[in-house]
Image (tube, rainbow, N blue to C red; front, top):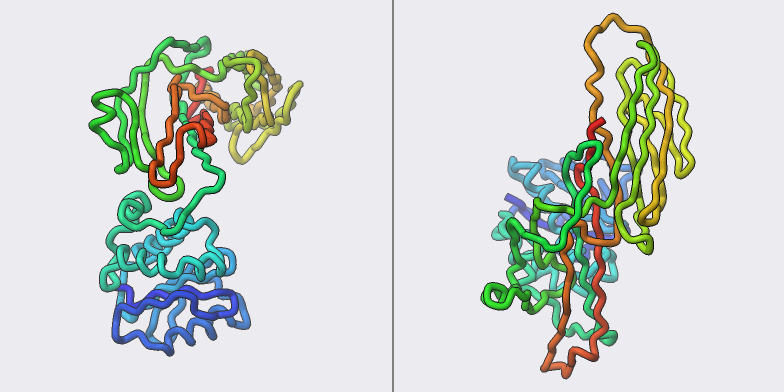
Length: 362
C-alpha cells in the first residue's frame, strides 16, 4: 500500500527513511524536497503528484512526514496512519522536533516495524505499542508519581435539579493492559507496572447520585408576542475553597430574535445571532456562590402560531474534583531494582471534573 515513508526537517534533509516497495527510489526523496518543501509557492494541498508518484504529507512544527506510493491507494487510510504516527511519537518522546527525532531514531524505526507491515498499516494504538516497545535508559531524578482523575458529567436536569451521595456505585469499568486484574478482584486495589509516559489506567462509568457542580435556575417570561424577559441564575454546589474555571453558559433564543440587551454582574455576555444564543463566560467562580444574568429579547412579528420550543440551557465548566465522588485513598510505589521506597517518591493526585452534555430545561 505505502511504498515508503520519509521524515524531513525544514531544510529538506531526510531524518528517517523507510522504503517498502522496489519502485520507490532516491529520486522520490529529492522530488518531494524540490517540489514541496523548497517550492516557490506554498503547497496547500496535502496530496502532491509528481511523475506518477503520490506524496501524502503532513507537517508538525518544522517537521514533514511524507508517505509515498505509486499505486491507487485509500487516501483516508494513509492520512489516518500519518496522524497516528504523529500521536505515537508525541506519546513516546513529547514534541515532534528535529532534536527529538535524532535522539530517538532507533525507537522510531522500531515503531515503524510494528506499525507497518510491508507498507500496510497494522497496529498504531499507543497503549498496545507501549506494552512491548519501551524507551531504554530512563531514570527519574525527582522520583515523582503523578496521577490525574478526570470525570465528565453528562445529563439533562430539571429546573430544580440537584444531587449528593455518600458512596459510589460503578456501573462498568475498563483497565489498561498493565493492570493486574487478579489483584483488583481480590483486594479492590489497582496494582500495575506503568508503561513509559502517560497512560489511561482506568475508564469507568457511573449513573447514580452524581454530585452536580452547578445548579442552573432559569426564568423566562413572555411580554406579549414581541418580547421575552430571561433571567438565569447559576449556583455552585461545592466547597468554598475550590474554584471552577472555564465556565460558559449558552442561553438559546428564538429564531425571530431582532435584538438582545444583556446585563450580567460577573463575567462577559454576548448575543451571537449566527448561533441563536446568548453566550455567557465566567473565568472562575468559587464554591457556594451564585451569579445571574438578565436579558431582554426583542422579537420580530411572525405569522407562525407554533409556540417556541424553549431548548435547554447548556453549560461548560471545569472543576477541581470528581463529580462521581471517586477518590484515591492511597498511592504506594515500590521499585526494588532502583532501591526506591514508598517514602522516597513524591506523589501527586489531581482531580478534574469537566462538563459533557450538561443541560437544564427552561
